[in-house]
Length: 67
Figure: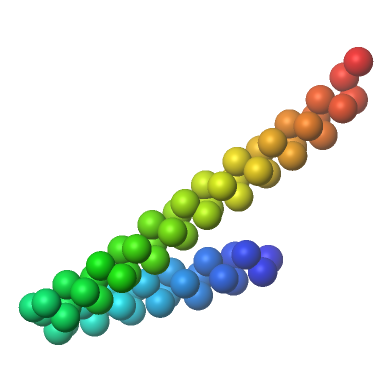
């Protein structure tokens, strides 16, 4: 649950930064958009790492019962 709350919070931060970047324009707007993109990419990276760990855990538990 805590991971989902963190994901929602940082996604909201990235979304707000992207909106500010579109509103400001110019170099500063591009900088805000770049930071938002970096945050979104880090979130996706961590999400994929977490999902692969979950798949590994589930596969280990599923294979325990087999002889």
